[in-house]
Amino acid sequence: MPKTQDKPYDVAGFVEAFAKAKVKHPETVKVTNLQGTQTQIIELSVAPEDAGLIIGKGGETVNGLKWVVSVLSKGQARVNLVGLPKREQK
Image (cartoon, rainbow, N blue to C red; front, side, top):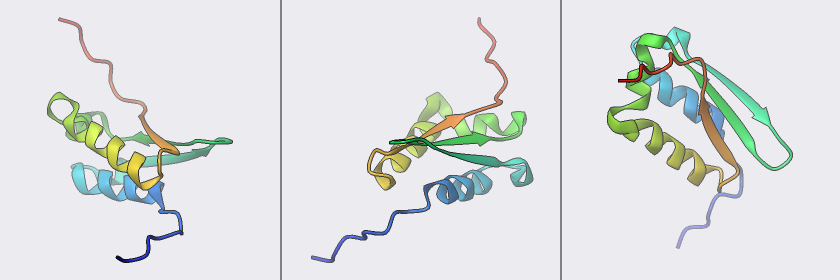
């Protein structure tokens, strides 16, 4: 069995690359990496018209992104979407 990688992954870099590949306006993608004492918080901001592409149908895309980030960081990082337009209530 291959040895596991001990070096931590660049989780913020992964989030940025994923978002830029997913949206129509990659130049507007902004990733802020906040390092706490025990948790890394990655804030992701995209253009308002790209919000749906990041969130996905029923939240599937963003939930998948959050799951991958959790696995890569061994539960030590999370993703917050910031600056997205508020959803209208029906």
